Length: 400
Image (tube, rainbow, N blue to C red):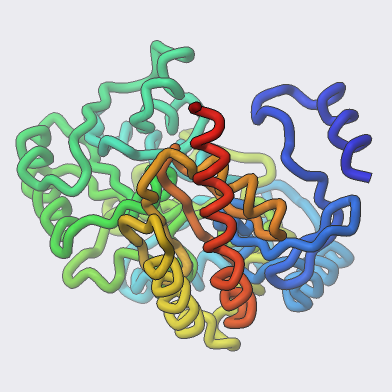
C-alpha cells in the first residue's frame, strides 16, 4: 500500500524533496503503477531520464549481462563498455577521427557540469557567463551557474565569478563577455525554466561571441540530449553550432546513473592526471546501459518517432482551453496556462492517471519516454480538458 511506504519515507529519508506524491512499484513502457495498483501514463519519465521508458528489454538485458560479467573495477582500469561509449559519443557529436575529442564520465548531470567547470578553470581564467533561468545542478560548482537565487543563496559563497545575462539576448551576452571570460555556458533549450526555446541564430551568435574573446563555448545538454528533442543533440539542427564542451546525463543511461563531459580541441586536454576523478563514473554497467540506449534509439527509429509524437503532443496541448503558449521540440514541451493553476493540474492529472510536472505556477512540462505511443497521447487528449478544468476550479476555490 502507498500510505505505509510514504509514512516510512518521512521517518527515514531526508526531507529535501518534500512528501512524495506516490509510492511507485513497477513500470512498463510509458506506464507506471503505484503500490495500490493504480496505473498512470508517465509524462515525466523520471525528469526526462527514462528515454526507453520502464523495463525496456534491451536495457534490462544489457545491465544484467554486464553485471553478471563485470560490475565495477574503478578508473584504474579500462573496460570495453566505457571505451566503446566514449567512442560512440564522439562519433555522434562528429568529434571522432582527426578531431581531438575526449570524454570524462561521471554519475549525473550535476557532476558532468562540475567537471566542465573545473575544466574551464584550467584555461587560466575564472569568469563564467551563464543565463538567467538556467539550471545546471545542485553541487556547489554547478549551483554557482544556476540562476535561481533561492537555490544559490543558502549556500553562498559559491565558487567562481559568474555573470548572469538574459537568455536569448545576444546583445546582453556580447556586453558581458570580454577577454577575462573562461566560458559561456548555455542550455540549447532551458528545461527547468519551463522549456524555453531561443530564437533561431541565438546559439550561433553566442558561439561567435565566446570565440571572439577566446572563451570556451559550453552547452549543457543534460536534459535536451540523447534524442529528447528529436535529434541526438538539441544544438545540432542549428547551422554552424559546434561547441567546445557538451555535458550529458539524464536520458543517456535510460535510468541508470551516468553523466558525461565531452570536450573537443584544446578543451579536451585541459584536465590532466590528478586534476579530477571519480570512483563510479563510467563503470561498465552504466556504460553498457548507455550503449543499449543509444543502440535502441537508432535501431527503433526513435529520433523520427520522437519528432512525430512530439508534434502530436504539441498540437493537442495547443487545442486546450487555457493554453497560452506551447514551446519546445520533440518530446520536450512546455505549456503556458492562462492562470496560476499548474500545481493543481499536476494533482488533478494524478487523480486521472497521468503523471505531469509543473515548473512554475503557470507552466507545465511534458517530457515523456521516447517510446510513448500515439494511443497514450490520445488518452491524454481525452482527459486533459477535464484535468485543466478541475485544476482551474480548485485554484479559484483556494483563493476565494
